[in-house]
Image (cartoon, rainbow, N blue to C red):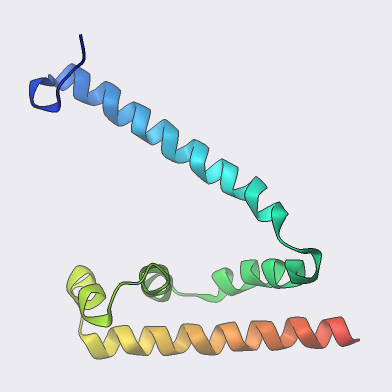
Length: 111
């Protein structure tokens, strides 16, 4: 018999949440391998991206993730409970950091 969400007990809910958590972890692990499918000439940027993520503040990272998923400045501001201008400032900082990381990667490749 198929379980219906409205009929879930606390015990069932815990099982579902555990299964969802495991699926999310598996998905993240698989992304690592999928990233290996990047064309060889773009891999330097992939390595640079790790440096970029390390440079970001937690707020910048939240804004960056939301913007790359297509969320608007307004919706991000509401979700983060900050002003739209703060969101735009975090976004501006991430763009500067991306630019610097890409330029350094290109410079290192030329040398």
